[in-house]
Length: 436
Image (cartoon, rainbow, N blue to C red):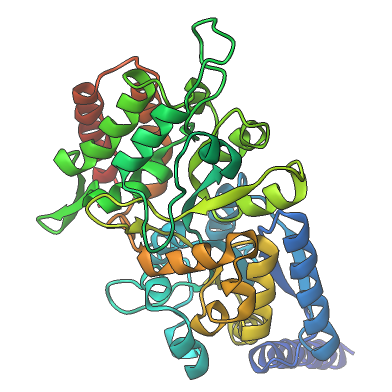
């Protein structure tokens, strides 16, 4: 009786082991029906619908590898992912941005996608987009699909009344041109000594991104490598943009003071109402807000990248990545390849009003039409470059704990440029030293 019981138990254990082995084999070969988890950060209504539609189309065509759509938010995704990386409870695919995922890759959290990328995709995606996700050793930590371009917007009627010709791609404004136009367009129409229309507005709340990306045109970089380690320096080139904005705020008084406490999206209603004649350094996605929410009578146009030493601006690509802890990496890459093929990337870029990372998409009529400023916005892709901060360990903490607070104090007039530069350098390098 005891022997029979032992035999039954042994058989049961062998059966469990075989079942487990078959399950693992099925997972490796793609035969499992367990869903792939995809965390998306799409937030605009059209983009949400497009992302969900693409997932539904995949599921209909690939019932053996279904994808579960999970809605994430930009505000919470960093903490969500860090927790998942530490516990192993990760999504199979997630949407984020290049400036952060390179840091994840350096910590070993992400799958190197370089051997998994189809040749067609590799050749079609722009070099600047690949540069934003490539590590120094050649590893690719995410597939770029949307690129942000910082543009400007102008109120055509206000420029016309002020006798100012709007910039064009062939004849862009310099920062000096912007400053002169903003002075002309700032008016006190009520005679109370306070302007009620401002020549320019710049969303300076949490301004690190806009300052760093626009500083590139002045030759600024903030981040440098010295002795094989990243350091932060605020030299003459970095100071030039800061001085220009500060002078427009406090000397010219042509930039709306509300810029200091507002983000770019927060300034859109003022642009709609004619309170601001121009809105500088806002993402290309803002055009959707104009089309959907601005008064129909508003005539507006796109300001191409402003020229300093060059018209170059830094960019951050939106990406899809696969955690190293995912048990379905091959299947996840199949889904990414489908989601970011030419037709789908076209849909994603149109719905988010951003630039597609594929050269073949940018050449389509949808992105070259004059309607809604697509032609100038797409042409700005030629000025996009990656900032020197890409891959700097501790970049996310640096931006939130050092750069944004110190720049806020500077633009608020609470500290001068020398003090801001000193603090950014000293406090930044204390943060970075913990990661290097």
